[in-house]
Length: 616
Image (cartoon, rainbow, N blue to C red; front, side, top):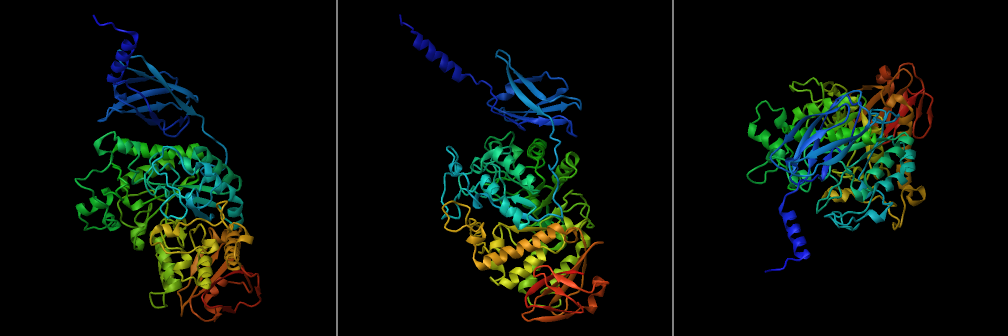
C-alpha cells in the first residue's frame, strides 16, 4: 500500500484549492464617496475573479443596497446604492456571501464633504489659462521617471516619442514663475495613469479612472499641486476624455459586457467629420462611423449608450471634483461623443457643483459648426448639450489670417471682425477659450514666421479680446516649431531639468529677446488680471478699414481702446470715426510703454502691431 505523507496531502490540497474558482474583490470604484451629495444614489463597480458568484448585503444606517446587477462577465458586479440625506460619514461594510464559502467584508468609505473655500470655483473670463504638458515642463523627482512593472519603460529626452520625466512636483516648483507671469488657471494635459506600451507621455489614452500616473507623482502629488495653486489664487483645470480609454484599461482588457466599447467586424476609425451632427442630409452610416468609430487603434471608442459605462464615467468625474477640488474641466474630442450622453453628463455635474465650469475641444470648421455643440444656442440643434464654452478654433484661424493674410473684403483682419460679428450664435461667447497655439498645433512664433512684431500683435489681441485667454507653455519665451509631427511642439521647457544648461524660468537664463517677450506677456496679463474691463467688459468693434482694426472693451469704470495695424508701415489714425467708443475721453495711456498721449484725435500706430490704450 502507498504511504501518503503530509507533504503529498498538502500538495493535493493546493491542487484542489487552485481548481476551485474562489471569488475575490480586486477593485471597487469609485474609490470612496460622500454623504450629503445632491444625488443620493451611487453605482459601485466591483471587479474580481468570479465575483458574481457572491451575493452582497450592507448593514449601515442610512445606506441601502437597491439592486445587485450581474452582467455578462462574471468578474463584475454593479451595485446600486442609496445614501439617505442624514447618513453619517464612516466605513460601510460590504458583506460578500456565497453558499459553502466563508463570508468576507470589504469596507467602503463614505466621507464628509469638504466645505472649505477655493474649491471647484469655475473658470471664467477673469482668468488667464496656462496649458502645460506635465511630462515636458519640469522634473523635480527623477526617482519616479520609470516605474517598475509599467509597460512603457522608455525614458529619453532626445526622443519626441519617449517619456522625458516631467512631474507634478516640477510644476509646484515653478508656481512662483506662473504667478509672476499673471497666470490665474492651469490646464494640464491628462494626468491619469496611461499604462500603454508606447507614447504614453501625452496622457490621452488613460488606463485608470481614479489614479494619477505614478510617473507624475500619483494622487497625493496632484492634491498637493492643487492646494499650492489655490494658495496663490490659481485655479486647476483637469483634462477629461469621455470618448475613449486606452486599450490597457482594465475594463477594456476584461470588458463587463460585449457592448462596453463599440465593436466592428474589422478595425474602423472615425471619419473625423463633425458635420454629420448637424447635416440635415447626413447618412446614418456616416454618423455611425464619426461617433462610434475608434479614434485610433490604441483608443477604443466607448459605448456611451451603455448605462453602466455612463455611470462609470460620470461618477469618476464627480469624484475628481469633490476629492481634489478641481475648478474646471477641459473636455477632449468633444465632437466625437454621443451628445445625448454629454447632455446627461453636464446636467449631473451642474446639479452637484453649480459653480463648476467646463469647455469642450471643438476642432471643427465653421462658426455654426462650433456653436452647435454649445448650450442653449440659437441654432436649431434639437438638443441642449449643457456645454458652457468651447476652444474657439474659429477665432484661432481668424487671428492667423489677420496676422499673415492680405487685407481684403473678407480677408486679413476682416476675418477677425467677421468672426466676432457672429457671436450671436452663442449663449455667452465670453465662455469660449481663445488661444494662439496648443499641444496639437504648430507653435505660434513659427506660425507668424518668427516675426516679433506679429508675435506681440497676437499676444495683445489674445489678452484684450472677449473670452478666456489660454497660453501654451513656452510661448512666453519664444519656443517654436511646427507640429510635423506633434512631438516637435512638445519639447521640454529649458530649465525644467537639473541637467539643463540654461534655465529660462529665470531672467538671467533668457536671452534679451526672450525677456522682452516674457515681459510683454507679463505686462498685459497682469494688467488684465487687475482690470475687470478686459475680463467681463463689453466689446465694441468697428469694420476694419485699409488693414486697421479697432475695438473697445468698456464698463462703467474704464474704457480700453485696441488698434491693430496689419500693414507693413506706420499709420496715423484719425479717431473721429471711433467717437462712439471714445466718448468724453481726451487722453490715452499706452498700457505697455506707459506713454501718455495728450490728444487722442490722432494716434501713430507702428507697422504690424496691436496697441492697447487705457483712455483717460
